[in-house]
Length: 152
Image (tube, rainbow, N blue to C red; front, side, top):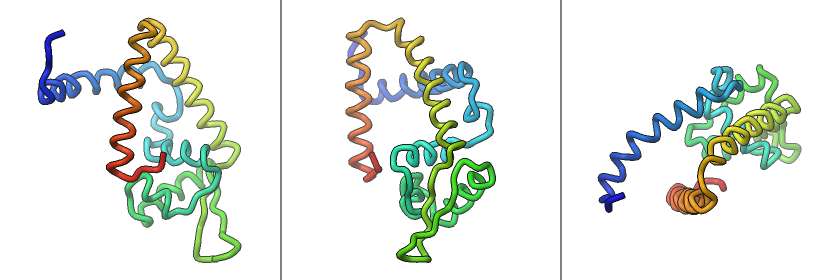
């Protein structure tokens, strides 16, 4: 492949990324891709799966929304029984959000389906290409995380 400028690279990615996202979505038959939960909700569930319990303010920063908007997101997940609100015993004003068993099961199910699809797709790519791809993705994640102060 000929050398690409950063602008040409950006143009190619703008063509490719929507197709990759669409094709990955077509191959997934889970709640995220059926529209039962939104991407921000899934990101919250996934973070809670790692962190167990977090303050509403921290979740809002993670998804880059106001705490009022986060309240609406969490309310829907509470109604769907994916999370529960927990009062902080030291400060009644502080609300924490915790994953339920149903929420944890959903995250595990989606992650496993996505894992199987990645294995199937990237099994057709050489080990060297996978390593190079992963190295670039990790580097991009690190750059974005550093710029935005994102929770890792």
